[in-house]
Image 1 (spheres, rainbow, N blue to C red):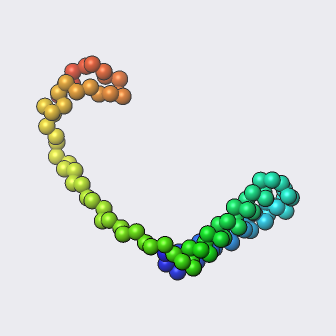
Image 2 (image 1 turned 60 degrees about the vertical axis):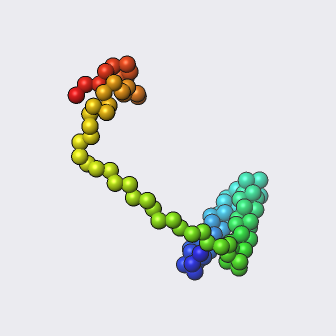
Image 3 (image 1 turned 180 degrees about the horizontal axis):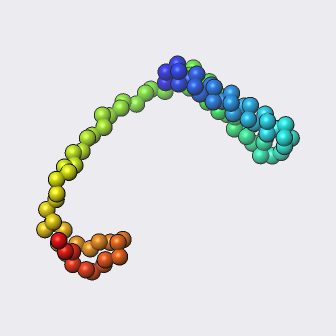
Length: 95
């Protein structure tokens, strides 16, 4: 996790803290507001832990590129196939 990722996480947590503060001022000590505050504190703890001792990064595999030709396929391969989902069940395919 890069420094900018941590900074972005901290910013998001700060925004969330402000939003929950606004909810508290509007709804008071409601159970749902207290749960949100509890969740926020857990998020802060987890963010601190991640920053202090980050886990080992996973190795990223390169994305496999699958080439799909845009040429017309062999229509004979599809003869007799059903067009499921299109409302043409048990109807022979035509060219």
